[in-house]
Each structure stands twice: as C-alpha cells, then as structure tokens.
Length: 388
Image 1: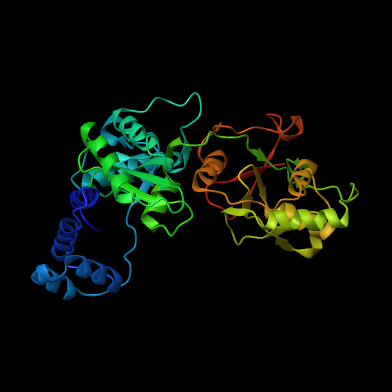
Image 2: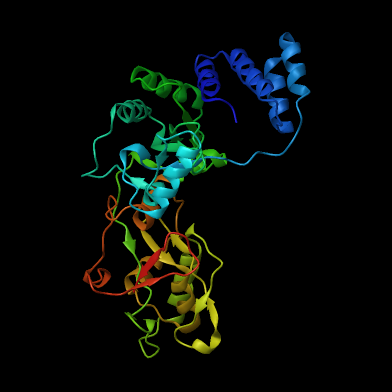
C-alpha cells in the first residue's frame, strides 16, 4: 500500500503531464516500503522511469516479487463516530472502545454496522454535502464524461488505532472517455482548496476492469452525484402470501403462465445483473419433497429487482406471483447493460437505506402492510429480506 501523500502527489504530476516525476514518486514509495510488488507493476514503473533514472529503476527491479496484496481497509458510507463522543450502550461498542483504549487510542472510532452499507444521496431530502463533498461534487459535475461520484470513508481494521479514517472519492466515466489523470487532478485541486489533505480521488471507466480497492470503496460508499436522475425501481413479489408460522406460500392451483411466455420471461430474468449472490438453496414450497433446490440470488435490469426464486417457480411450474414483472420481461428487448450508478442505487434500496431515491411500488399489491410478515433469506449477510 502506498502512502496517501505519494498517491496524491503522483496523480497531481500525471494531471500536469509530468509522467516522469509521477514515476519517481511511485518508485521511491515502493522502494521505501520494501515490497513485495507484482512483476507487472515493476515493469510499468521501470519503463516509466527510463534510462535516466537507472539507480532508482535498479532498486525497483531488486524488490521482492509477490501477488497482489489483500485490501486491508474497511469502507463506510458515513463518517465513523469517535468513541469518546458516544455512549457504549452495546456490547459491540463497549468492546471496540475497550480495545481502542488498550491500544493507546482512547479517542478511537466505531461504526454502526449499517453505515457500512451503500447509500444514494442524490435524491430529494438527502442531507446537504459538507464542504469537502461539495467541492468534489462541483468539480466532477463539470466533467462532461463523468457518470457518477461516490465518497467512502476508508477505515483501518476494527479496533486498530492507526491510520485515522480518510475520505476516498471514486469517479466513474463513460466507456472510452480517457483523460482519467486530468479529471483526478482537477478533483484533487478542488478538494485541496476545500482543506482536504492528500485528497484521494480514484477514476475508472464504466464497465472496464476496476481495481478491488475502487470497487469496495464504491460499493460501500455513498453516491453523491450522478449524471442521470434516479428512475422508479420495483421489487418483484415472489410468493402469494407469507404465513408468520409456516412461511412463504405459492398457490399451486393458481393460473399458469403460457409456456412460450414463461420461456421468454425466464431467459430475461436469468440475464439480469447479479446483485447479491449466494450458494444457499431453500425448500420448494410447492413440492417440499424436492428438498432445498430453490436459488436465491438477487438480480436487476436497473428498473426491476427480482431473485432467482422467481425464475425457478416460473420454469418449474409456470407460476409467477408478480405478473407485472412477467409482462415487463416479455416486451421484446433483452436486458441492457446496467452501469455502476444503477447497480449502486438498487443495492442502496435493498441494503443501505429505507427510502432510496426513486424507489417505488408498481401497485398496492407491491406494498406489504405494516403487520405483514417478512421472509428472511438464510445464508445471506445483512439479513436481506424478501417481502412476501
């Protein structure tokens, strides 16, 4: 892991088209850290240094080799709360505070587990951005190829007193947009002017290969700005009803979907973008003797959200509790690409907030009553619930 200052300085050099200086900053930081580094990184840095920096290049070449290191950070969509300013009302908070104090950090920080889940702050009613977020938002919104801006708080492992939390911004650009260093540089300058030290701005293209560090920061961060406004999102019904004791039910005597329609709808649903995957299987509620054979993965096309459970009952029995989804899936067009902004908004709706921007219900049938039981999906983190 490179120091934040080195990363920020190198990106500033790239934005100013001083690629040799950027290579020197990165090379020195790598040598000072002592490795190991990947062969790919060593070759890239050595080539950027060139013959004029043979001494520094030679030191890079002698660094030990290894695979890509794991990402040690946690990411949160909200700033963690200083432990000293909170009351240890739960065992988790008390344990964290005790561990931080034992490590010499009585002013350590803790996070509510829900703040590690994604947020969409682009909708009406969202809190106004603070000065740093506002500066980044203004800079990125002025970029014609920008699609979205996220901010995450980067945290050390639980109870680790150093380093302190740090903002990380992620910008997604149109495919093939290029000019990532210049865009990162302009955003960094705006953040520096707002008082942010060693600003961290990650820039990547939509649909392209993205480093795990950037994916994690984006996924568990807060969407601050997007070029496209949020549209309505619909959560598909899976079952006809959910009994508080016996669980979900799907009436086997209900009307069957036409075979050709079921085939086309199932193909559409299977092509949806996976959102939350799990290998867990649950029992078939129509024919329980089949055992645990029903898949649970969540998918989306950017407008609807459904689980593979829907496709299972559709292909196995021709049954579908949500005919509006079937109509949507058989309008002729296969699901188009779903970009990172759309995926984040759906995840925020499922996991991160009660009322995400644009989340809607298609009809009264989609809105469960307050007392309606909820079916908790086993084997999935976050107690993801599928309303019956």
